[in-house]
Image (cartoon, rainbow, N blue to C red; front, side, top):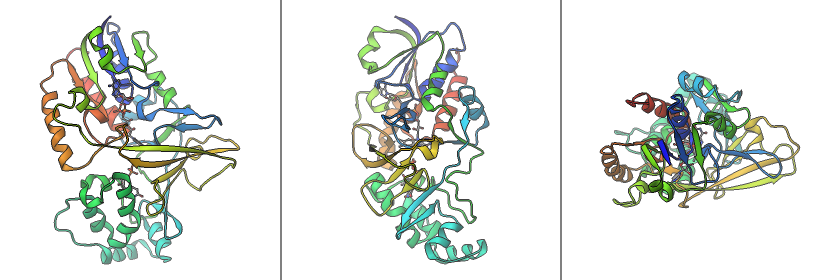
Length: 364
Ligand code: FAD
Ligand code: UDP
């Protein structure tokens, strides 16, 4: 079979490449995907109760990047959704991230913004050099808030305490002195109206794009005559783990259908200090779907087989650098996406990076 491009992985990275490459009518593109569906971790589907769920955990699209937003808006309309999260702490459901509302509810106070600044100033710990996620939380908010909202959640999520993790992990969570309780404040935010999978189908609705599901690319690589490979799978697997296996954190998802219209007040509730799961997502609250029953998902982090999160410590970054150096010597392979770049990327960043790599290709 003669193809110009062999794309490994039908997640947002691979699909963005496929879509852009297909703009040139001469390009013949084959996407090979080992799962039974396209969409990668953003895949969603209807469960047996006809509730739309995100099979690999809650996915909220949010970005400040107008180019990415406009690009994806070609393939979907958006359900206008502003993400809000509650965290179950000290027997109460308290807004997360940390805002004035969080502080007032947690301590049963009625502080103004200025008073919150003074209060946090009295709580903060001085950290000479920020080296870990623990340092980030302690220097932003002090020990009590760190222990109640971050320490146990992060330990559950990653299997190690925040003191061992890169500062970038907890830095993902904003810290605010106002009353804005939204999880994200990006300019553009929403959930694809008909779901991520439908959006992804639109991206590759082109006669020059073929998709082969349920297939590991190593099974068919030798049988395909292609010019360039776009690789979005795990980089260590590409090189047969020759420098050793990279560490990934996995998550096991458990769904429950409940015979009630509403299960919880917000789409996501975090449980930092109780249970083995980190959070519960109620999908209808995110997608806006109306139904008499509801489906929830609990997330149990662990060391399972599915590589969800690249492990954010120096040791694994150093190992990744060995693979990266090797990847840079390849002449007909482009590495893109969360797994190939071993980075904790959001969806908008993955699409943006794929668009940029595409634009830098000499002959696309
Ligand atoms: P993936 O989606 O992982 O796609 C890679 C594809 O390659 C997969 O389908 C995989 O099966 C396939 N593949 C791998 N190896 C092979 C092989 N050997 N042969 C063939 N195919 C192969 N981002 C947000 O912006 N907002 C969120 O709210 C959000 N929530 C998240 C929640 C969770 C629990 C997780 C895990 C991630 C979340 N993300 C979120 C991140 C988002 O999922 C990623 O940014 C995005 O899906 C990455 O796209 P990708 O194409 O790089 O990788
Ligand atoms: N986190 C935490 N407490 C929370 C929520 C998040 O300690 O209530 C930490 C945790 O380490 C997590 C990181 O902040 O991995 C980033 O959180 P985010 O909600 O962005 O996680 P994701 O949706 O990527 O799993």
